[in-house]
Length: 146
Image 1 (cartoon, rainbow, N blue to C red):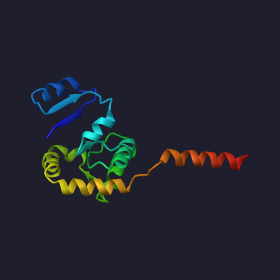
Image 2: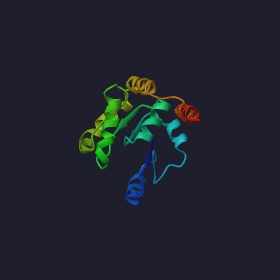
Image 3: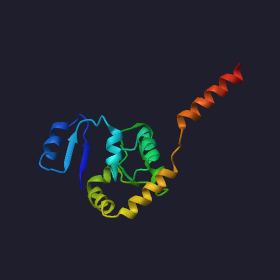
Image 4: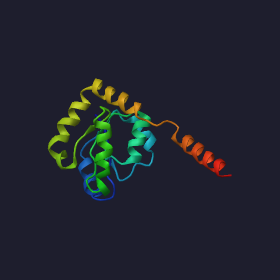
């Protein structure tokens, strides 16, 4: 198992020091080549922002989501629930992460069939070619107004 850890700026020196003791852990404040990171990942552990969810759906990536409790109207929990209730992701609430994340993560790492099922289900939820659909709506709206 190899771990690519995007730490963010807050606490980065401490997290990078912790990771430094392991040959299979790479900790960085920011991953600039996210496409490469996603391609390398068999499992993504992430917060549950809308942009991230869209990327995971379009790439069909198995994921374990830990929604941030510090966002407006608890929208990340709603995002994660939309996937987890359909078998498209595993969700762990932030308050439960310390207690349950290690065992859940281990079970997903050791169960390729479960990861494949998550990948299949999340892929079904993707809205493919959304950019083209948005452009079509804009053009149709403009043409209707002319």
